[in-house]
Length: 333
Length: 252
Image 1: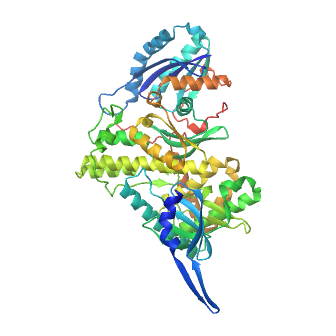
Image 2: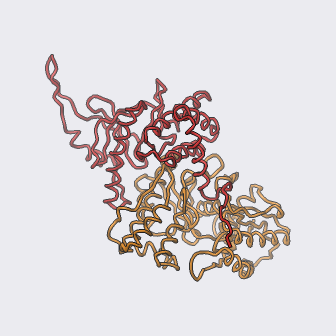
Image 3: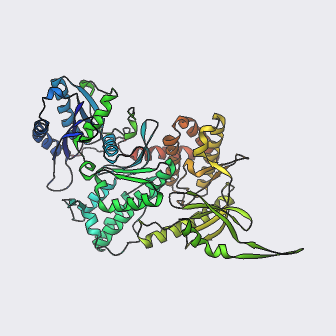
């Protein structure tokens, strides 16, 4: 079985082609990335970039697998959550491909795809999942056929906090240098923890907006930027670690998995290793190439869904900017 | 971990008490029979006998992934907060463990043992009437706490104990407690309880929430609506919640 997946929820337009083999399941993995000259992602500009460059990525992916597109079994597409204009480009292309080739169209939730590719690449069976990216911070676990949310941010996401702060303190863009987030790099020279920055954990939820505001305030007052980076990093990462530990204890699961764009952070990885060691849990961190947004994860999740009979009529395949991870029935597990 | 705990407890374990009784003297151990029974998210829980009383020892152990002085500060504050919250709860008539010994620098708290099962583990074996009764009691307790400016901070089903024989409801783990009467903090408390029901016991979702609210209303009356409205607003702040309306207005 061969499935082509299309990802276009934010700044990455990705095409993945996968088969249902255990090894070498990735046949093609093409990505193009919208990189803003300044500031964050402008949804309209990103979607325009996708519309102009997306078709070439599909062409390249198909050329790589060197098969007639007619041998593809299904087209999978991320219909949400994400930025509306960006989602619509991917959805339009997917609907067109499915109709033109006469293939099934499979709707994929972007967050579920991050989790499924994590399970595939780490080999974990039933972990507590920590999903960290620019737009998401959630602790979820599979309970009775749904990825249920045990804890999440009650305001902004971890990646959002780091990126916004880096931008406002003049450290970014670019946000990632040599695999390290600029906040992580800047924190290396930090020496002191600034006491007045708030650490907020509410039950199993975290909150970062107060930390963001407080950090900017001390920055404007002229406090050493390295100390600010260090404090923000420690507070933000440790609150995630704490709620992860809580979820681990509450669910009594023995595995923990980190997925999403921020999972690539080596600093955070160390902290999770310590956590796993303390609690005797198995740790799995999705490899960096699949931690960020990509088409492979959409294709892989699409394949799992297609095998259990989930498809959608092209005329009903409408994007959903707010499609929560706990709204998807996980009938294949 | 066991060795570390013994080290923290060493002075208590070595202490003896001389009891002078009418019919002679008796020497007793201050603390004995320490047995680790669980590992929580931030603490080790052990059972022991302290001054002849069955107790729970809660030790907030050092976290290797935290910068040391931040970690020390946290453990100290949370331990003393917990003891303070337990005393206050007892004073307003809520069933909680009784704190007996505290060493906040070490992150150590010794409190009376409750022979019970967490609601998380016992919910599925309860009858519908019992689930409702327990949740109503929890609502009542949480409301009492809120009325007295105490916000529990982590009121999940793991932190509620049902005593084995009496079926009394106990609230435990006050480590994240805040002493405040802010509406938002109270609403977050309610939200945390609702979400622990949804994620772990979703088949009881409607019933448990309904009964919780009944209990809560018994104490707080009309103020309950205010709290519930704020709970809804907080839920809408979550990521990708569809009901949330975007409030942006185009201005020229």
